[in-house]
Image (cartoon, helix red, strand yellow):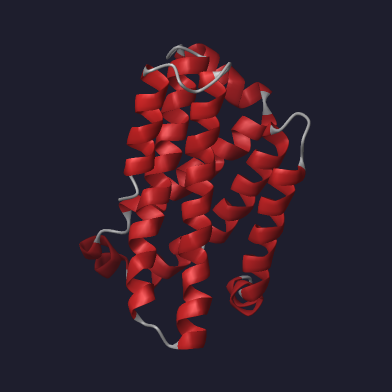
Length: 181
């Protein structure tokens, strides 16, 4: 179901229905989709615990994997439409543009989390799995920063996302403090 909006987006793009700057629309849509899915995956834990709805916890993994998939489409859209798969240009963009640097750092974290979401790897990693998956909070901050820095004028939408990310982190402040001990 999470892929239906992506399919609709790409159909609109190929039918030239995305307005004056379709590249910007595709890149923004996939990035916001990734951010929304990550936020949703992180908000499920406090809701599930507060209202004792354990089945919600089973959905987190799937939402996290969807978030990574959208982030990957975000990157692929940038690679295809902005730098035309010119890897030298792409790497220079990573170095020259801080918002792309933090976005790539977040994507690397999401990649590591996605790969280690496989049940057999989770078992093999033991307690190290949880330590690795705590990096989702760092990825969340990097994504919020990526979005905020990428906007050139109207910062209201990114600020809303920054506040949502900070709110979710505040809900987990005890866990995050324990992480640094």
